[in-house]
Amino acid sequence: KILILDFGSQYTQLIARRVREIGVFCEIRAFDMDDQEIIDFAPKGIILAGGPESVAEEGSPRAPEAVFSLGVPVLGICYGMQTMAEQMGGKVQCSDVREFGYAQIRSHENYALLNGISDHIANNGVPLLDVWMSHGDKVVEMPEGFSLMASTESCPIAGMANEAKKFYGVQFHPEVTHTKQGGLILSRFVADICECKTLWTPANIADDAITRMRNQVGDKKVLLALSGGVDSSVVAALLHKAIGDKLTCVFVDNGLLRLDEGDQVMSMFAENMGVNVIRVNAQELFLGKLAGVADPEQKRKIIGNTFIDIFDEEAAKLTDVDFLAQGTIYPDVIESAASKTGKAHVIKSHHNVGGLPEDMQFELVEPLRELFKDEVRKLGVELGLPPHMVYRHPFPGPGLGVRILGEVKKDYADILRRADAIFIEELRASGWYDKTSQAFAVFLPVKSVGVVGDGRRYEYVVALRAVETIDFMTARWAHLPYDLLEKVSGRIINEIEHISRVTYDVSSKPPATIEWE
Ligand code: XMP
Image (cartoon, rainbow, N blue to C red; front, side, top):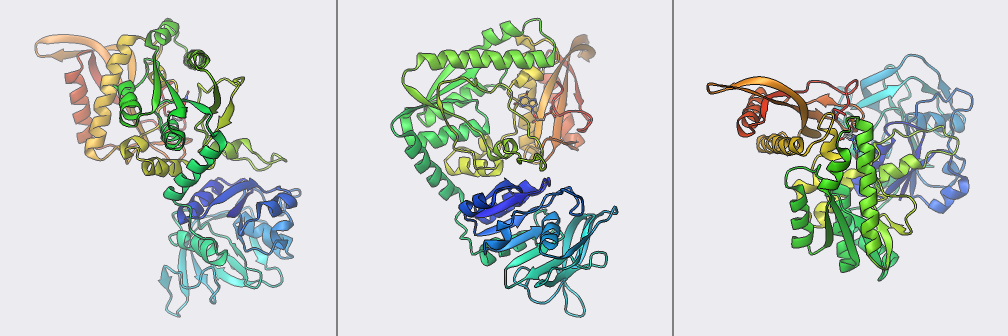
């Protein structure tokens, strides 16, 4: 496996995902990992990632000594290259001027990392690569033993190599898709130079997870809160395969789910797959507690707490359950394992509101702890879950509770469910569902006038929201075709009598959030 040391760059997770896509397992750790921990980790290669700081600044992060003495190949990317240069006796020059964007680098000689990889060949026969740069500081003097691997006009040392030690440094970012040959370069490093076997495939991930779950759980019983979302569904499918009927799932219908969602979850897991699922129909309880409450945060709290109460109650009815399964995924783990010095900080992911109580007397089973979201999805497909389910847009824990503005009422939820289903159906039919990251309808409890035939109508408004995003921290409103919007709005107004008007949300995040509450 490959060790990736994080210096706080937003791109670190991207490096890990690329390496895993190549089929090689890797883990991200903070740059201040102990030498002994690195030795125990026994990496076949190490990648030093980028970071926001300047190597020249006092107290800026450095790679642990063991990185360079372990005898395994090392690849430094951006800040990783600079700290490698500095620590081995080279020089880094500070600069306030940032180089950001495309650059064309010349690749020199035949170094193992870039040999035979190019986008173009110059007239004089020099291989050229189109790469993505994002840096201020740069290496101006290579350490002893290194020679020039790549250069550009503005960055004369854009790549350096010490072939004897198998140490490489690149100033550009091979992990971003703008660097067209980036995947090939990373593959050259992990598969060829580090000699890692490419065994990290969905089939192997599934086999491995099933074996581990069997070992951990034995013949004891496991309880899982199944929400119908991707993560808990994949955990259910995995555990069902691993331990069969020793798994019990609790599925709570809170009255704030999408159209027919409860029935779909039951038919897929209970009927088709034969998973033990206890369905709790708690619509009235939730809606009762939400009556008269308009504040979004208060609504979230009520929905979260009510869920915990119900789950507790169901768990208490079951005897001899020892384990609680959770769909924790790798980005949550990386985030909570921040560096000891607190220097490198990983971007926050959105926490699932409505989590489980902390004082439960169970041991935890977290089979997805090592996986990125895209790996969880591939694993789901491998385990036989339908792709349309595994590639579904995310749905917030409080569900329609935060998509009905202000007070939540059953009538509103019923209207919204139908409008949302029409929108999603048309997005799927037009091929736009997979081109957007999240799309849904929002219920506005205001009335607007319309005409139907000879009559006047005075009914509610629905807003449509569709966004494109990678990390859900920033998002662009999706430029859906007018024809599609026309069709959706026509269908919603004609098919749902209590809606007189449909609008499309053209706000991006920031400053607007994705959800309306
Ligand atoms: P915002 O509205 O903050 O949403 O731009 C970003 C992402 O988070 C989801 N979201 C939630 N998910 N509980 C959740 O489990 C919540 O309370 C919650 N609020 C927002 C939202 O759907 C989007 O994907």
